[in-house]
Length: 107
Image (cartoon, rainbow, N blue to C red):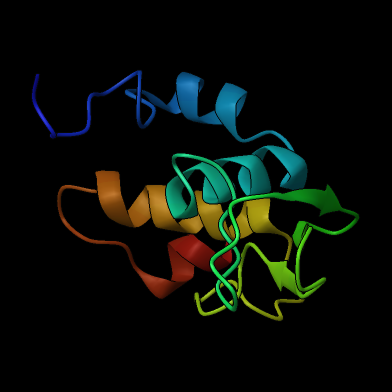
């Protein structure tokens, strides 16, 4: 089995798939949680493997009660712009053959 990501399984293959995968901020947060903790939540402070999701895309450790945002330590941390917008910009950068202009991002 390959460790390489597979289109359609680990990331969208087309714009249509992208839009269906990441239609809401909750969809984006779920994807980030899967990327960060592919085997399930693990507390970054005490390394306890159990906890639960709380409102706003955070997880709370069952042991030490520390709350950790899925976006902590990423470029999405403490954002004001919705994650759907950030994901769309990242998608444009990743799929553009000749780069992306600032004007096209602004549109």
